[in-house]
Image 1 (cartoon, one colour):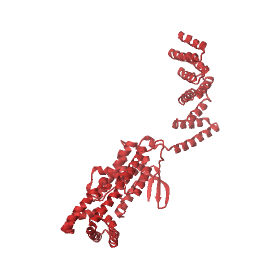
Image 2 (cartoon, rainbow, N blue to C red):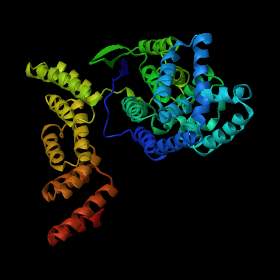
Image 3 (cartoon, rainbow, N blue to C red):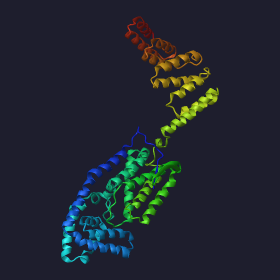
Image 4 (cartoon, one colour):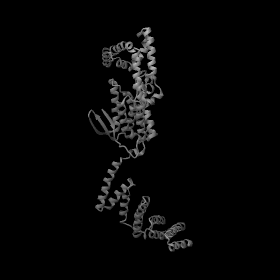
Length: 482
């Protein structure tokens, strides 16, 4: 059974580069670093068989398994014992040797009891050959070099084990879940803090695993502890908000909605249940539990400080924003069609406050205020609309709005000289000298001397460029009188 949160959609305008980098690192480590492991282990098996160590260790291993089953109640080892006896009967020395070499607990048992289990001559041969195989081959395998081993715990392996995997299935499964969770958590924290939180969760997951397997030689590899940390962070970011979850059960999958934090104890109890059930499937359930607690705890304790989610994280998805906008816009237009202008103005105003990047809303408000051109609201809206057209580089719309305002309200509510001056510049850029002169007349009537002088100079230059010297001279003469 798999349950993962799926509330957010990936924003390809801001790709999750750190998540991609972590995925790429895991793939490269597996392909180029761990790819030597089969060759090293194969050579170890070959050397083991050539030294006849299988003939020496197999009877001891069989007795070791029998004791574990009979005296320690480890019934799950019965299948392994049956497999060992079958390989002995078939004379399959290679597979038998692989089986023995893959059990680090048995190797420790031999090391601790070699004086009792072996005759002196056999012991010297065994120790010489086993140490050589361990040193030249097994110790150079990735899981031994960079995996987390509770009996040989160090700070280096708390990070490196997170990038190792036990096979293609292990790698692909982890990378899929890392992507599904990672892009959302990275969006919340940003690349740098996301990486620190990811590695921290993985380190705590490793320590939790080591605590429950203290002193054991079994190796931990994989990114699942770190990914469990991302899962814990994900749900804490949303708290008790209902979010969407994806679940997969056998051949059936679907979505459901639930308060985000409700799933945290469910996941945690699931990991603890499978750990105490001792299924023997090789899954590091306590590492998952440690990662979950680490990720959730990090955000719970520091979610209002250094690991606080960015404000943009909680904004609705673009599709949701568009859907909400369309619904409210339709309501505003419906009020307009019924000529309920106060309600239409109220709704357009609310939309404009929430969506200042949609010029059409300001245009609607302008036309509503234009119904009463004698009111100050019309002047304010006209200025706002002209400034918007200026920012959007739409000089034609700016000039049309300016001319309309001159006809309707300039006589009672004149625009500031600065507004006319902006219109003059827009007219010049639009190559409309007639409107530029009209705007200059407004600037000259109420503007400062410096403003008039600069506007007149620009007009003179423009007329001169067009070889309209009489007009250019007219403005030059005017400048001399200022």
